[in-house]
Amino acid sequence: MKASGNELDLRALLASGQSPFPIIEERVHGLAPGDSFDLLAPFEPVPLYDHLRAWGAAHTTVSEGSVFRITITKMADPAVPRYLDLRQAPPPEPFIRTTDALAELAPGHCLIVHLPHRPTPLLEHLEAQGIIWEEQEQPDGSCQLYLMKADDCPCR
Image (cartoon, rainbow, N blue to C red; front, side):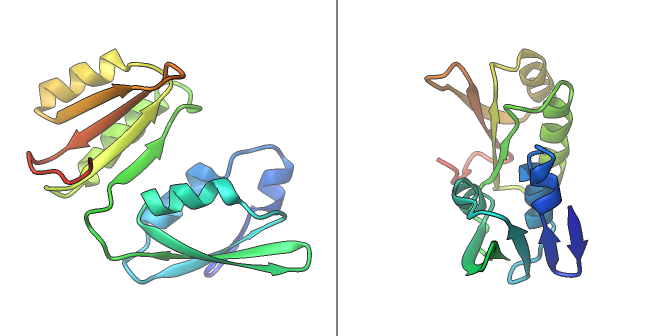
């Protein structure tokens, strides 16, 4: 992976078989509204586009020969919930990343966390912290949690 200024080149990372999603997600969430950066990829990353929308970002894609340049721009809509797909993350990373994201979450905003199964230890922690949540079992056995810092969370 090569990053220079506002450009993140994913070709080496993808060639090594690693997932770029956590790196891209971190970079998107680090942007201020209106800020942007470019991704360089050897193919058009269509599955990424839904994640970008869930993370509150827009994109434009341009083919430059054998490379796709995806310009990602953080949108200003605070009602867009933050989304973490942690189904592939090894323990205890889902617990840590979820609690870290909650600490950064502003009141009235939501966090959606997709996990490989019902996270009993995390739910016990959330209850102890007074965090409001809803859980939804998915057809594949995974679990989505809708975490809220206020009763009027617009995430659903």
